[in-house]
Amino acid sequence: EAAVGALGTIAEGVQRSMAVENMLLCGGGSQAPGLEQRLMDEVNMLCNVGDSPSIVQKPDYMPAHTLQYAAWTGGAILAKVVFMQNQHVTRFDYDEYGPGIVPKKCGL
Image (cartoon, rainbow, N blue to C red):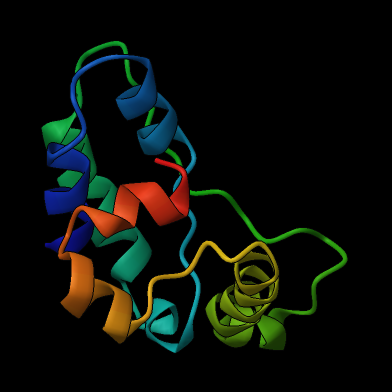
């Protein structure tokens, strides 16, 4: 439901098509039996006729057992990059400046 809801918030067009055509299931919950098929069924109901929903498969060089940790690994890598560029929002920043600080600090 969350993935379909998130896709529904993206305006029709190129970005939505790219998101639908490049979904990636990762993390421990992605191993749930039938999840991939259920997601595809629900996304197909949401898509336009021209869209081709697909789930990106893990790279061949990535062992199958590491897939359950892929979200954590990606988050750790992103955190290193973001904190080095000072593009993170601290609790103090948010309390001091409110939601408007997010686009300023994150370059949005």
